[in-house]
Image (tube, rainbow over all chains, first blue to last red; front, side):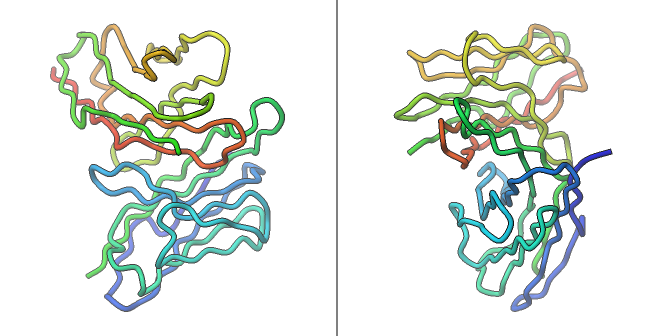
Length: 118
Length: 113
């Protein structure tokens, strides 16, 4: 079955350590996204990529980095510069709609990775 | 700039009662609107969407939402809820040519047996 796989599901990190969250999709989607979810704040966009080797900052990119070397993969690194990294991280992908419905991308989400900083 | 407001953070409803989850958006251009559902400890799933055409859109599990341009709303309704509808519901908005989807803060729907 096609879908998005995020790993690990749970991750604990000490302050000052970088950590990388994995996101792999076999849906042949061009676009991939990383969101952060905090209680009462909904989902906030960290980074997104519409094509291999290209990505753009979202609304809260500070303290995070990404790469898009393969269409299927979009790993997120939470660096030590991220002041409050404890959160639930969601990866998503979509086809890129063009023409008269450009922008109307329907996102498929992974099951999420919960990061806790000790 | 676009934004979404979900005024109700939590909505408790008795089983088999109707429910309405409110969503208001702000955008200076024509919008695309979505409702996503998140079951406990899972990712989000698309529930329904409005892109164009009929202002009333329906999902396969009995939910419906109506796009109201004059009131800038996209409220989600179900005439009779079930225990399995317990989840968090997110409204989201984007517009033509914009790859970034903006989510509301979510409404937690709790069904009381």
